[in-house]
Length: 324
Image (tube, rainbow, N blue to C red; front, side):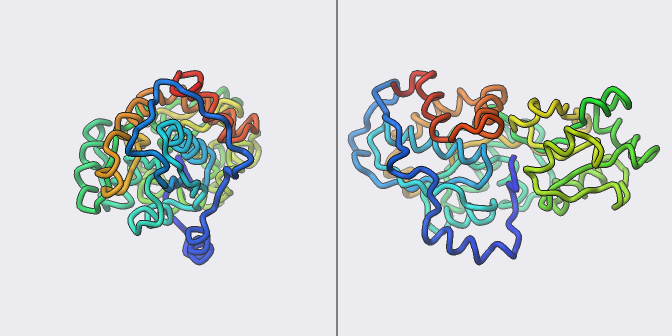
């Protein structure tokens, strides 16, 4: 989701070049929590191995990055925290250039943004298989996907749902044609310009919302603004974001299956994957536990309750028995 999640504005490129070079760390040494023995066993070949873990800048990615760090520490590695890189393009570049070794990426993002496909694959496993195969030429290995789907959605606030009964994107498109002011929508800068964002959505559902009813906001501001109403009745959201239930927003059903599937999975440089093949099983077992409900709940702790991603990651890993 995430996001924004998926393209980097040119204005931020220079800033991020510096960020990648220096490593933007959110887990400093004093914040490290203890990692005791659990189902993740020490891997001899991994003892003390420096593995650079990255992530994008939004809460879910910060959380996933910390889960990876905890898992690596439990397996005996000495991970370096290189999380919190702004924008999909920059973290991807950091991986492909060898600045970092691994991070959680989304199947839909890779399929559309990196592999330059315009039509998503509707089946989640088939989408993952296609991405994994397509990315191999880039020396990027995909480990098992999580069943969580952090896809885009248009969500409606509680009052507008009661007033207009809008439950699907087809309902929303019809409302936009009939009463554009009622379909006022808050969206982020990246969603406004992406083919798998608002332009593609309008084309797929055959509607055009007037500019006066499109409110461009920072992604983080969309949730409370749409939830409160007034400025907009609808808002762009990520489906696993914990602020969706917190703001009593209801994602509309994508009844024409426009949005790609965004399953998170570990992407790792092929050289590192070959050096430490036993790590795949570690991350596969973690990915299997991260369904949409679980990930949304963990995101809520970070985004709504203000708990640090490292603390949320550690507690969840303990609750699942990965560590103690």
